[in-house]
Length: 139
Image 1 (tube, rainbow, N blue to C red):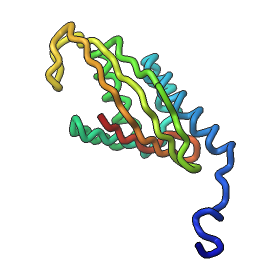
Image 2: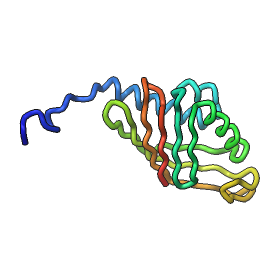
Image 3: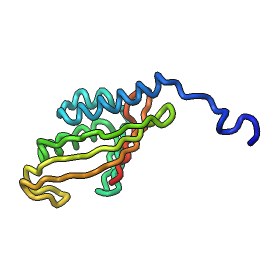
Image 4: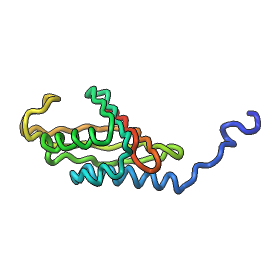
């Protein structure tokens, strides 16, 4: 391999990775608590969610906060449990986890009142300046 190839690339600063892991943890904690002010504080203005399994595509922090409030109405006990996080370079984190909730009413995705919903999810979270900028959800 020529000099200066992939193996010679600069190391990613540990501080960036620690900041990114902390931001993702804070985002999940705020989501679980239903604390939309804290959720907005750790999300970039341009925050975007892509969830191909449900066809969800949300653009903008304020739009996500509004959707989050609707999800709380549908699943008051919803909760994300992180099982693993791996920093990816200086601007992304891979997250494995589980989403659980009990439908309070019939939902647009077909859950019936009282039905427990469980998803094993992987997420790719991209960060902008230490704040969550993009979340791709895979099931």
